[in-house]
Image (cartoon, rainbow over all chains, first blue to last red; front, side):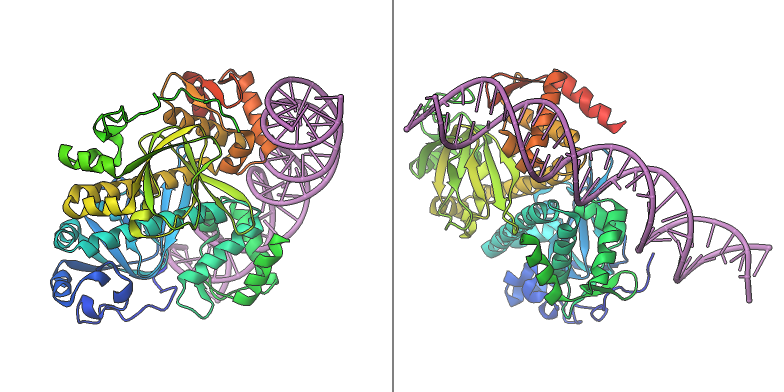
Length: 242
Length: 242
DNA sequence: CGAGCCGTTGAGGGGATTCAAGCTCAGTGG
DNA sequence: CCACTGAGCTTGAATCCCCTCAACGGCTCG
């Protein structure tokens, strides 16, 4: 299932061999609020893992024993509706915290699945608890992240699941651009994934992508990667309002 | 704007005149984790307010000085999209905590607007902070509520914004039933509200309601209230899967 | 009584879905 | 080497569900 990286990965050990203190996402990660000594301790409580596209970080209903800091790659949150359809409810990029419900000793609420090759740090529930005890900042940081997740969910629901197929697709590209390192190089979901994100038929998603390619807003390199012309994307988005 | 209550309201002072300790939603409210002494102090930091349908609890972007415990009635969260359309992203019922972002000294993220006559307790950011300092349970309770809100948002996005118009309307009724005191008596949103919740045209929402009335799943008393036959609702929902 | 809001219903059109066929590409095995 | 297969993507044609436009009735309020 796609063993070749879709996006350039940071060196295998993004922690840089020096523990959390040298991690590439250090300033964006949960532990960014910890002091140097705490951080040293923390490094011990952390396990590193890497996943290939399609592999789950965790699954809905599973007892949640750890939270995860996403170091690189993209993860999707999905859920199966009462009717049996899969719906993708959001995406997470580098620096994000996944599976926060673990802190509350609750089972995971969604499926979290790697979209690209992904590097993660797993932090046991117990470790987070321990630090949160003496360090009020960590508790606060957790709250910030809950609020951020809630806001992201509302944004996703408001912008990506309403309007014409074209408008949804354009806004999706906007999101993908933000998740990408830069340079317009983005991870391009499969058509089925797109359709489950935007609530469209697979064929409709395909048609929209094709059209965007004709308009040179999108340029597909190999399946799974594309370059987006941010300029033209903004123009197309602006043209929707009219 | 509708000064007659749509739903039976608890006695004017739901706090029961005895402060938070006797509040009707005491066991479901944020301060349910406080001890008796704390609770006595807390009562001083709380202001009571009531709103008529259509009045805002708070508005997007406003500096957030307080969180609110919803004592009775229903509140909706809404947002205006980039394209200028209103979207309703969720509903809150008695016991819910509104405007949590205040704790983080962030401006409110959404508009929160009374759908029915509403009774609230406003708790200043400072007061919550003070209690959260010495009482770890309160911090935890806040986290629980963030997680709950996130889960609710995902549920709403997954179930109510996909599928046929009929399926969305049926699932909306399900939600409305849960928000209601019981007995099948529910608050029935205006057609415009429904359309902004479910991403349908106003006329389509009306048509669906009409049809549900013909099927005796729904019985509209006066505008804004209805009785739902929970039995038949479940049947109709089950029939969708086939 | 007219104005305005809300809800309802009809008619027609359009955008998305559905059904279907055909394409490329990778992997498999003859 | 090449046929065969299956997955993923694309495109066409027909259908359908929902949207848009429109008219109308009930109701409240000035």
